[in-house]
Image 1 (cartoon, rainbow, N blue to C red):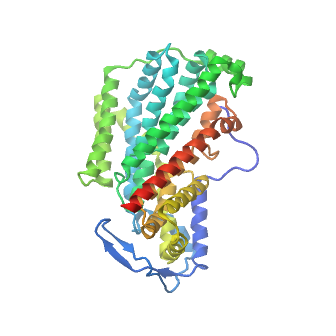
Image 2 (image 1 turned 135 degrees about the horizontal axis):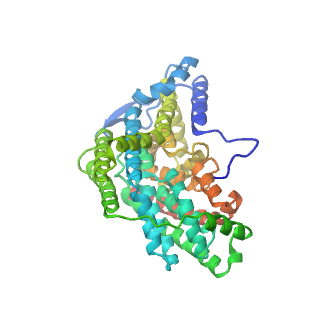
Image 3 (image 1 turned 180 degrees about the vertical axis):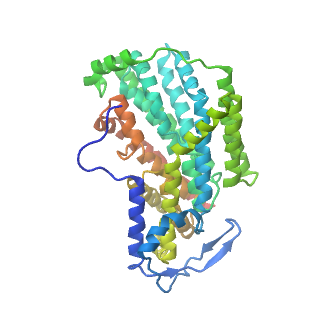
Length: 476
């Protein structure tokens, strides 16, 4: 993979940004007046909720240097309003990472996509919606992102051989998985964590997210197919036409042409993969499950798939541990992000900020409120590209504000998921975006030229869906 490093300024990682925010919030506890709301028990949420209009100043408790140092540690186990202990969520993330690692080690995902491309040979135009549906399924269920990097070297030669260009292949993968993440339905790293932080279950608002996913996926597929058809009819229409000869020499000469066998065992693994998420949905929506039960489900599923795939004890354990290790950064980010909330709560400024937000949105309609929330999340996503980190950072504040505005909390979760997914289609801080473009030999500015009309269309669709849902919810 060509290096994506550039001399000069390098955007800091999510870890650095979040720790800097802990320091900033600690400094703010010395400046922002302390205050608290009165709280009452909510039977619907099973938690105490702030009472609108009850805010009152209280004695300040500014946070010290030692509080800053301990905040990331306390973020894992200190109880935070509206949020389960981060250690539960972090453990769930590690276990689902192990589960994905075992499924990947079985070869079922690679073989399934390779088989699909072979079956569609000669009908390459249908390859685009089919593969984008598979990638979107991965995006909406488990936040498929880094996993897509392995598919570029497989798909780009096929697309070039079919008289498309490298950009078409990059779009199929990046936009396919990206629109799935944008329309996250049961994505553990987006809607599940955000719903937990908002005090609702991820089943709340699921139908709206399904509708957004379906419409945005259809529009994205049409957009990519339209570009692909233009390039196939006239290669000079390609945004990377100047690289056509070099790309053909590079990808077609270097591509592996061996077919990957798609066995009955692979089919069984993929069926079990899908059933696992189906059982999770049932458990949360009907069985009263949450983090512990879901973690147990994915642990059992990983072991079962490993046994069925005949990985052997050694490879099963190794695949599970490697998969969990790949998501260790996500687990650490969850605790680090919640450290910000710990400092805010200990410094008694959380309710002051909440009061300012309550005052700001007091005169807004429900429709205006949810659109403002969407654009706030868009702005935050550029600075915190980690969906899980942003969820834990923003939901404990923005979800209670929705109570004051008369908007359902699950709608705020949907606004977060769509905003984060949208930004992560283009943000240069994402290794998925920059890595995928580097493998495809597509310059970043060409990608922006290609994708910006689609971003405008998707933004209009999302804002319309959020506004309609807020209006109907307010009317109800």
